[in-house]
Length: 351
Image (cartoon, rainbow, N blue to C red; front, side, top):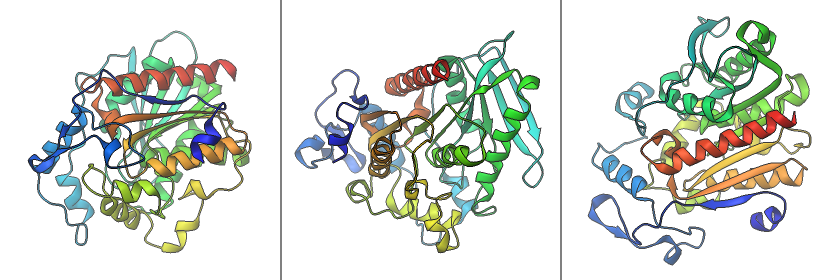
């Protein structure tokens, strides 16, 4: 159904770099045959960079989420690493009013001397981990590829600050950006939102919010977004374990963020449950093939298309959740950030 809806309506692209060996070395010394032979929805074996990352992760301690605390997980977790970060013209760290003790933001300027479009970027981490530094390389590269000032948000994390605290921090920063556009050197009529994983959840919610309360947005850029707490899609069943982000880990993340299960139906927590999507900003959505979140992102792309929203969708074959953080190491992360920048430039030009 998803592929039928995409036909002729959007650049539904599956991408891979140069061909790699048909069998990929996996954790525990096993060799897994190409996924096309064992799973109808997977088209390619794991990319070598993904396989190496999984092999390294398998050497770490086992994670028991039945008793895991947020503090313990933060000490144990190491996100995928990229190579040397790209330089930009100027980087500024600020703290704006909001949250408990102010909200930290970091502004990345690809060039100076003229007002530029602006992209609010929200880091991922399952609502529980991560910070501005984790996506520093991503934001530098996105500023360059998009030609926009990227504003990265250090929102409050769960479980210390459950739903909707972190989202409210991001909304406050978005409102601050447009209210202080002249001061920070950006164009208030050329604003986009972006994020990865749980950060893409916030970006999607802000895009929906923009129709009601503003500010007007011209695009939303979502990298492997978290969109629904139901966890009942095909990809949750197919990739439940063994691909870095597991179903057990996602269940634990949601428990930290939504301690009150009644909030699981709130579209501010689960934007995929929003049925009135007409008029939301155009979208670029990137997903990884081997990711529990893939199906819900594909379903959301289909729902946006059905509502008449322009969508650019890419499924990165052989990749796993978090591959964007491997800039300079995984060539497809570099290609993804270039494509994302092209989408943002096109949206800014059309706005």
